[in-house]
Length: 615
Ligand SMILES: *[C@@H]1O[C@H](CO)[C@@H](O)[C@H](O)[C@H]1NC(C)=O
Ligand SMILES: *[C@@H]1O[C@H](CO)[C@@H](O)[C@H](O)[C@H]1NC(C)=O
Ligand SMILES: *[C@@H]1O[C@H](CO)[C@@H](O)[C@H](O)[C@H]1NC(C)=O
Image (tube, rainbow, N blue to C red):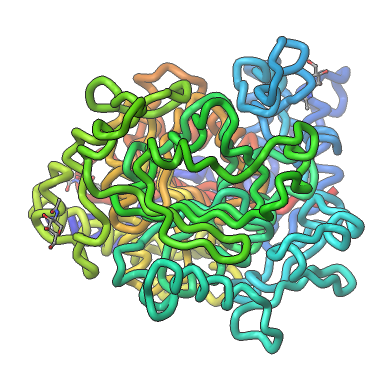
């Protein structure tokens, strides 16, 4: 009966202070006057900053602001250590854990200085990442896929005019906009032909047949500006861009700005945050990785994440000195040697011009048959979070060892659910729950919810652009039910399904449904650029994190960092943690409202919107 949890329309908004607005306004003004008379303190500075200089765009309401300031004041008064001001301009594109100079100082070298080292960027001071001066709210999907505001991303004109890879050449600059030519545009951009070529090399008539051939998800390593991913998405495939952290001209930032799935990640010293046998295809076009390095460890890692029968596509100039920054420095080769692909039991299906297509074996016995082969890893692998790259073959004894060609092309069969240990009844009940939850969530995504006559769950959808929601992150995704409901409802959103470490590892199931997903420890920052998600959703995450003993303040600041201005947050949890977070987020200047589901439980929804603070 979970689907009826919004049944009763009456709601209690515990957001309000328990006395009337007029009295409240007078009180808060009085408090301000008293403070103005006092000697200055850090709390005082922070309050005047938020009252004096920031103009809240589009829906700022004075009395709401007074409430926020009052709460902020009250809390800062009680606790002088907090100073939630804006960070400096140098942090506009700040990604924690990727401080190369700190990594070098700590002795990391040979590429490891570009890796993620969270232990070296523990932030003492909490500040809010500000938007660039010329930041503009992105255009809605699908316009935003083809045109972005150049002020929103860190990219200079020179950078993209000089860059020459196939995927990068497609950009044009128009005043303050960057335009990408989409599939259906007038210009034949080469991407379609390329995709078609890959399909043919696999033995398909055209790229429309990828899905029938068992391909649902693709890991696109080093995705340029995301145009290949954009094309694959239009074919109903989930392509996730993954590239190393770049301080300027980031591929991941650009892809996300276009509303395409992307995450920071790299092949250096550790395994990718995905389980074994996760992807149907791994693709690299001049992605700058030296595949023969480290005795083929990177290829072994590709093999680990590939499903049996899956494909590795590599497009790379055969001249063995190519122009990628890492490659040219070390003069190494970027196409794997036959020796190693042999040991990996990969079959070279085709080679055309600069493109190679290998297929992973479907036979788990194959590895043992190779002379001087690579040993099998010991035991089933659990969570591949922060595990060092391994010189062994994974997954051969897994119950997930199922060739992609053997999978049903439609929705998951009960046999497939069983492989994941999921009871079909639980699964369909879960989906029912999310269908109804989504309907209600969606109707709440409007600034109206914060007004005097707030929207209630079930009210009609707000008019665009207020509900511009494309990049969604489900911070505690479980089976990926929110993602499934969004798809079913035909919303033009994609979801980064995050499975927190320490929770049941449902990521293989999420990926098998053709969704994007990743393992992540929420006690650490998420590997993405600031302002990259339109909506963050977290059901039960706060309760989970309470047992992990990490800082809720850190978490909320991290959410603020990755949320774009005017982006939404929906948190669903027990009343205790919800109240604590509500107090915190009002200090971060978010609009926030607690919704009592009135179903007799102590579950609450916290709906928030991050303001657009221009400075
Ligand atoms: C009330 O709704 C919440 C929604 O998150 C649900 O988890 C809970 O089980 C419901 N409680 C009852 C008693 O129906
Ligand atoms: C990176 O590390 C260096 C050296 O520890 C430090 O001076 C600098 O402030 C750090 N940068 C950021 C953005 O945290
Ligand atoms: C996959 O399908 C082939 C042909 O239908 C069959 O021979 C093989 O046993 C199947 N493999 C698995 C693991 O189900």
